[in-house]
Image 1 (cartoon, rainbow, N blue to C red):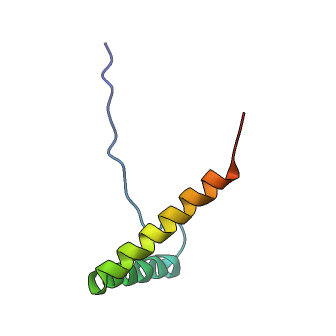
Image 2: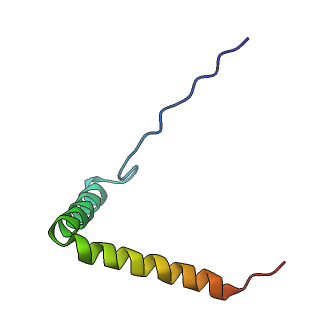
Amino acid sequence: MARTKTAMPKVRLAKSGGGRRKLITLLVLGAVVFWVIKDPVGAADFVSTVWNGFGEFFSNLNITR
């Protein structure tokens, strides 16, 4: 019986492109981490507002089959 091998998922920030794209990705990620550390309540409020906005948007689409 053949054995199956599960692959570990690889996490890459910027898979292709030059160093510029990777630098921008790291800068944005660093800014987000800094914002969450500096103002966790504001960051959580922003995330919940965006999440509720998406939920409201999709509920207003009123998709019927």
